[in-house]
Length: 325
Image 1 (tube, rainbow, N blue to C red):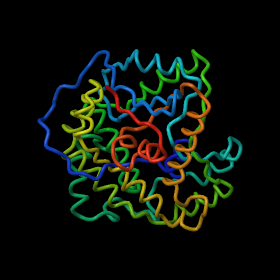
Image 2 (image 1 turned 30 degrees about the vertical axis):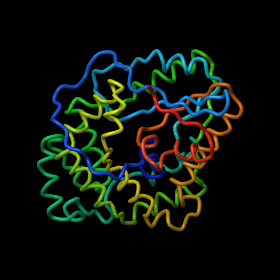
Image 3 (image 1 turned 90 degrees about the vertical axis):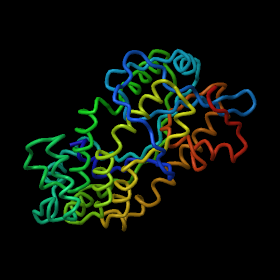
Image 4 (image 1 turned 180 degrees about the horizontal axis):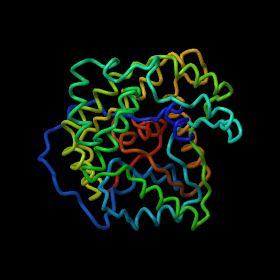
C-alpha cells in the first residue's frame, strides 16, 4: 500500500545535468570490496561547517561502502539534514480506507494495454528489453508506461550487477543512531486531505509518460557501460571523473509526467514542488550552519555538481563552498 502511494502520490526529485555525455571506454568489471566513495564538500561560515556527502545511484552490488572521513565528520556533528524530498502521509487508518481505491492504480485507464498507449517504434524497442530483463509477464502489459519502465529499469540494473545503493543510507542511519545525532527533515509535506479523490482522479486520467518510457529504454539500450563508469568513479572517489561525466537521467521525464498530470494541476499544494523542496533544503542548511559548529547532510551528486546545484545556492548567499581534496 505504501509503495503504491509513494509511486502515485509523491514525486521523486532529480536534477539531471544538461550536458552531452562524453564517450567512455566500456567498463565491464565493477569494483568490489570496501570503497570510500567521494570525499566531503565543505560549506562554511566562520568556524561553523556543514559537511555534504554526495551520493550516486546505481552502485556496484558487491561493493561495501566505508569511509572513515565521512564517519568521523558525521559522528562529530550536532545535526543531520535528511536528503530533500516531498512527503505524502495519509496515516495508517486513512490508508486502510483507501485500499479498495488503490486496486488497479498501476493499470492503464479503460483497460488499455502498453501497446495501445505508446508509439509503435517504442513498443518494438520494449519487447526485446522486456524479454532480456523481465521475461514472460503478461500483467505488465496492462501497466502505465511509467510503471512498466520502472520495473524494467530495476530488472536491468540487477542483471548488470548494479543496485540502488541503499547500503550507504543504512550505514549512515546506523552512525546517526549510535551517536544520537539530531535529525532534521528538510523536505516538504504535501497536502493529502483529498487523498482518495487524488487516487480516483489518477486512475481515470492519462499521463504524458511516453518520454519517461522511451528515455528508460534508451538508458538500458546504450547507458549500461556508462553507468558502470560512473558507479566506479563514485566508489573510487574520483572527483575529476565525477565532474567530467554527465548524469543522463530518465527520472526528469518521469517526474514531469507526474507533475504535469491532470490529477495534480488543480491542487495548489502540488505546484512548484521541485522549487519548494530546494528552497526548504537551503533554508534548513542555513539554519544548521548558523546553529551548530558542525552539521552533516547527504545530497545526490546531481544536486551538487553544476551551476544550478543546491550548494551553488548557498554560495550565492555568501557561504564558502569547498570541494573535496
